[in-house]
Image (cartoon, rainbow, N blue to C red; front, side, top):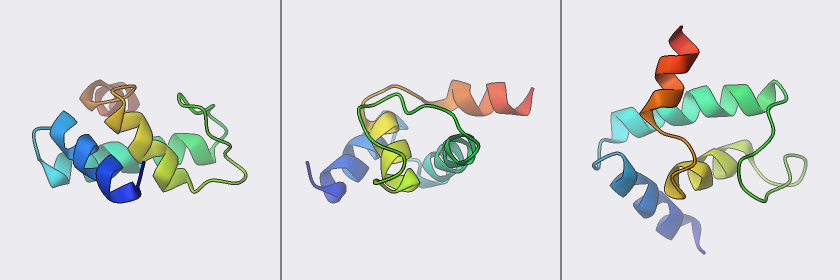
Amino acid sequence: MRIEQIASKALEKVNFDRYLLSNILFVRIDELSRGAKPLVNKNVKSDKLSDIALLEVAEGKIGLEKIEDFKN
């Protein structure tokens, strides 16, 4: 799947709220950079962290609850 399709699907998951999507991605990219395992079948060493995080949102693996957990 192309990155444009993944981004479109991820936006659908957050009701087309780009601000919310960027916040979710920021939190998840930070977690991945600190060693968290991807929730999708991607390699952290060969794929961009932003692409992994975007795919996780698009597949419904993470969402707003991730930000709330990160803040607490």
